[in-house]
Amino acid sequence: MLVAEMWLPLAPLPMLALALGSVLAFFTPAAAGPTGDRLVLGEVVYELDMPSDVEFERAKTFKIHNDLLLVPAESKPLVGVWRLGKFSASLATIAKTSCDWKVQQNYYLPGNNREERENVTVEECRELCCSTSWCLSFDYAKEAVTGYSANTCWLSSFREPASGLTWDDSGKYEYHEVQDGQELSFLNVMTSGTNPLIVGFSPHSGDVFQFHLNHASSDSHLSLSSLGPFLHPSGAAAHEKPVLISKIANWAEGERLLTGGYDRALAIWKVVNDQLELEALVSGTFKWPIWSLEPASTRKLGIFVAGNHANISRMELSDQSNLTSWTEVQNLVQHSRLVRALAFTASSDGILASGSEDNRIVLWRRVPEEAVGDGVALNDFQYSMRLFDHVDAVTGLTFITPAVGGMELLTSSSADSNVMFFNPQGDTSTCAWQFVANYYLPGNNRYELQDTPLDECKRICCDSPWCLSFDYARYADPGGQHPAHTCWLSTYLEGPSGLQWDSSGIYEYWEIKKKGTRMLTLEQTGPVQHMAYAAAPTDLIAVARTGTQARPGGLVLTKVIE
Image (cartoon, rainbow, N blue to C red; front, top):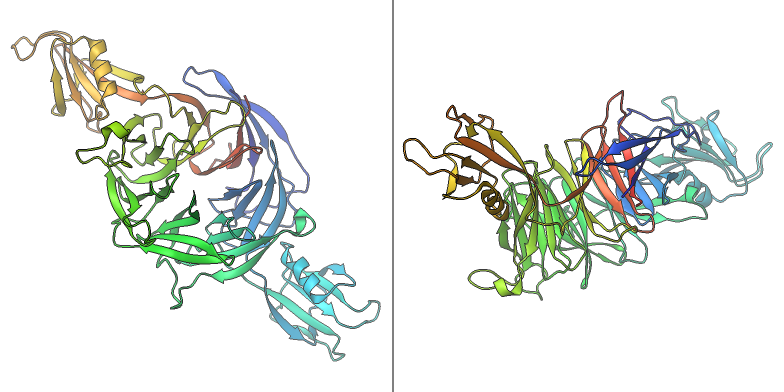
């Protein structure tokens, strides 16, 4: 299996002023896979075809919609739109999030004209300015003036200065100025309406904004039409505090947008008449901000919500005919720290993956029908296995099915500067071990097994969902406390205080370092901030990561090609 990488240098450079069409590429191999094989090919594009006079600092998140990569600006009311190819990305436009206008009759802004257009209507000039990233205003001649015909506009990258505009006593000119729109922290896209509805989220409030993406005759004229923030009939926003996460549910009952945030509320949205409508709001259930959520493949299986620190709530409709009756029906407990990422398989296997600040990935599977009963419900999920491969917080999870090979993979990103690929159907009885002679972990034993060979202790611990380590006595205790070949299974790992030294040479400490099947590891330049997947035919994985002066970060496109 080979993976190709392409770098879009959107960050962490403070500002970008990148020359049009200037491209430099080179190939760098990177280690991947449990055997250490050199399986990765990296193609890095240092400079993208972005206009040299456009400054764009991206936010930490982005959204992939079909073959479009949508990237909000960090602190400006702009959205960058790139078109994804199978091995490349090209800038389509930088769109404003709003094009509301201030108009002053009989005034103009002299000496700051950048582009002239003749024989255009005011509406056409507005559309042109709105879809041009640098355009902030234009002058419009309603009638012919010296040297120019009627219906001419002059686009400008300036606004009205402190000194004001110039008076036009002929009555032939008017001045149009773009009003600032809403800066956005991240985006999502709903497709169940007549046109795709882009949903944007304010970084400073609970406001949820709506936009239509307009396709003109060419990519360079892609633009956003703002529909404004969603408001209840009462005039209030849906969320009281900023939104942290949004996911799309493609259920048989229709497409839904799920959002959660700092206000500890879960909102379920649908599209009605090409605009958002709030279907349900669940509050009072979650004790922590909702850092992640994930819809199951069907509405009957419900929604998984990480809103209770290390635990995951599975929500169901208690009454399928009452769309506001979302209730917690199961509490999934295996993590020890904040859960930051959730992903649900698109296949029929019913696998949930969760990632946490405890550095672990946990896989959960739907219980088989024969296990239903004695407090286990038909749609319940149960612990399957842990993946111990990351050494820092897990920041993202997504299931992908590359066009090449067709096998579903679990992809994870982490603050440890790695992106990893797993086979979620891997052998759960396969464990990688780390052992230390002459040490043991005292006081944390759960089960004792006497007269048990070392390999059998390893097998039992690996097969036990709760077992993370064990102490093993190769020899009998001189005081008669235990015979030789005794092991003590534990739910704990070596902590900050370390292990206990064994001067007798009797004991060994064994710890699980990996369970399951990791297929590839892609080392990044720094901690990974965000990750998303563009399905076939594009078949790309986009990864945003930090970097250093020596190894710049940015937004990387990774492709499984073999």
